[in-house]
Image (cartoon, rainbow, N blue to C red; front, side):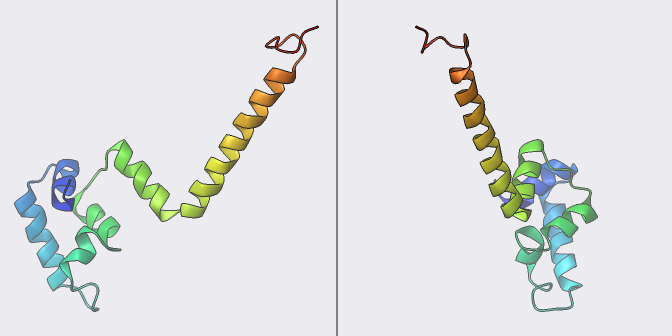
Length: 104
């Protein structure tokens, strides 16, 4: 889904208005990155632009954005989750009277 369409769906505004607002934001920019339209639609200015237009991301978009903003937390969090699951499976299998694979 194109960024303008995603912003339009999440803000209740049509895509033409989103494009016009992004062009206006780029025209008001001060640095080399801030004067480029892509900065507001797909770059680092995407979050601030979304706040400016009242964008409310869907759950999947919000999770994906959080994972991209904090990749280390995502990596180590998933690593810890799967390690805990592996330990839980091992304990369940080894528990006396649990699964019953090693009963005499």
